[in-house]
Length: 212
Image (cartoon, rainbow, N blue to C red):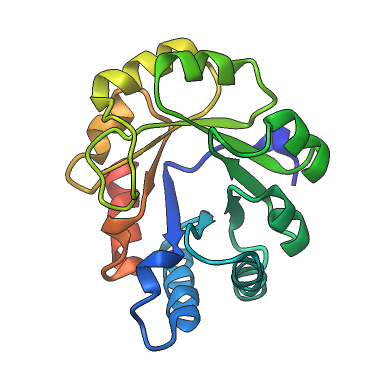
């Protein structure tokens, strides 16, 4: 993939493996969810697993690649090594993960590298790093993260927009009810987990209409 041609889609779905642990066949449920998101029109998916071990994460990532192939860009959360091992398209880094410079060396120049920020100082620093996009949040209160950072609100999105020209992904508590306000505040893309869990194909289609 040519990073120079990367244009973030308005919708950035995140597949959180923890949302499927209660299913009888968690891996099957996760893959079915991913397939439905793609069928609805999602062109980029991030795989996130905060509870599983490296073996499970690699297995899931390889299965996602097998099932979805080249239909969507697949981003691995946190783990640059597993991104490389599974042949995914990129990695999303947190504040405590491998540095963006080291990650770029590991995954190469053609991989997508994104980075989470939670305040203006972190956005300013990220703006100077070898990143393809910057994520900022949580915009609203969220229940999908165990220890969330302080909510930044729409004003936090506006502030982040003023500090970087890199593509900006907003995350945290974003739903069909508030997604347009987040884009209007300056985000290029909205990352969503919970509001895509029920009827994912139809949810993606509705969100894409709202975000058009």
